[in-house]
Image 1 (cartoon, rainbow, N blue to C red):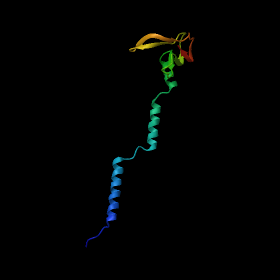
Image 2: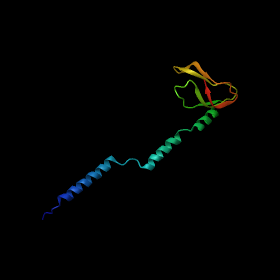
Image 3: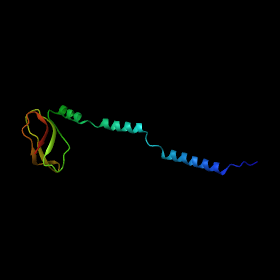
Image 4: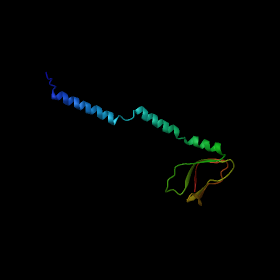
Length: 119
């Protein structure tokens, strides 16, 4: 005795099988929690500005932090400077990795300063 299976049932079985195989081959993207965890790990690895500045002070008595600059400006915005004794901040042109001509300097700083321009 031969059993007859309706063609529509075979078609549905075939479609479901193809979908399951496709899902297994493509695989889901990382769950959102794993993406957030990866972002947090990356952020934790990048030192903050204050941590970087603190580590410079631990290595030496002098430190400078220069903020992002606009290229069309003729001055340099200095974020923070800490000096062990009075001195200047001097900005040089780059000549293949060595200091070139002076393009800006600060006034005499007694112990440092915060948010000033070198022209």
